[in-house]
Length: 196
Ligand code: SAH
Ligand code: MG
Image (tube, rainbow, N blue to C red):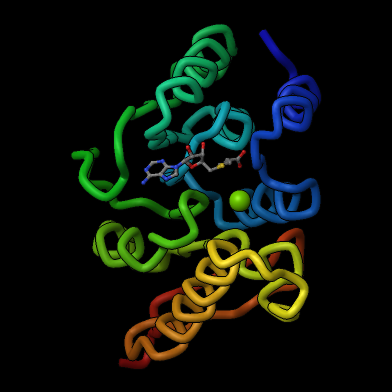
């Protein structure tokens, strides 16, 4: 079994974009505070966040989706050798189209291809528990969202636009309210409005 630190180290060495420490700690605190029992993660990478979430509570059930077969393989090994691995259901496939248990999920964590966040949100928000939270990672994209002039790369610029579009999309939702947090790479925390 790999420890969380070892998985973090593996992620850094292999340049897997695992959640940065600050965001990771914040998310774990949030799961604890919410007494989250069902957690959906879009974008498993090597399973570090999924396994840590499972470790928080013996009643926690985690569903996590990963489309890259190499990542999924590494994640599966980590899950199978982890004492809390039986609480984690890894679904291999593209989160835009995979079928998953319908929930409801107390917390949904969107942490996959940045250009597709809106698709993920629209697809999975109906599975959110009444008082659940949707957390979206990488809302600052290494500070580039605030400073797009720092890159000339067209692909990167296009992604920055997509993140801004997503932030505007969240902002415009009538039934949800979103708080943007400057932790880690920027987290958006979205909840259903109670007064609609
Ligand atoms: N949540 C992980 C980090 C995920 S990194 C953690 O906290 O450590 C983003 C992952 O999303 C990558 O492994 C990438 O392969 C995966 N991904 C990208 N697009 C996806 C999609 N459409 N469906 C499922 N997984 C996707
Ligand atoms: Mg991320």
